Image (cartoon, rainbow, N blue to C red; front, side, top):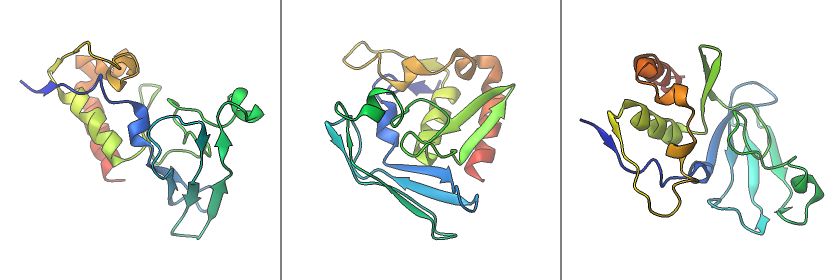
Amino acid sequence: MKRTFDSYHVTLYEFVREILVVCPNCSQLALVSSGNFQEFKAKIEGLNLSCKHCGYSRRLEPIERRQSPAQKNGVILKFGNAIDPFFHAELWLLTNYRSRTLWAYNIEHLDFICRIISSDLRERHHAGRTIRGIGSRLPKWILAANARKDLLNLISKLRNK
């Protein structure tokens, strides 16, 4: 029996250092680099979007989390959606399953989701950040046993994209 012990202790923020996106200029694979971003800080800086195919490059000005009017209105940082949270570019690792969207920020995130889906037993240890963890935030259709085979096939296709 496969087990997943860490899905309730790993947050989405741990997968945003490098995000694979569709280049807004040439529609090829591009990279969003967020430096050493892991948790919200008072000031977020060092955010870049770059494409090695066409040379497109964009840098986001430093964001003061609490003072920025754009951030207070939820315009800049949007986590948990099928878009890049910083530049709002379309994610590269994105596919549809029965009119729902399966997405991942990068291969590491995709592998993590794969481990959760393929596990037969998902354990929840009540220590610390369980409410912020990915395991408590995944939609029920991803965790459903009857969708397991189809979702693992889709993840395999995304991995080879």
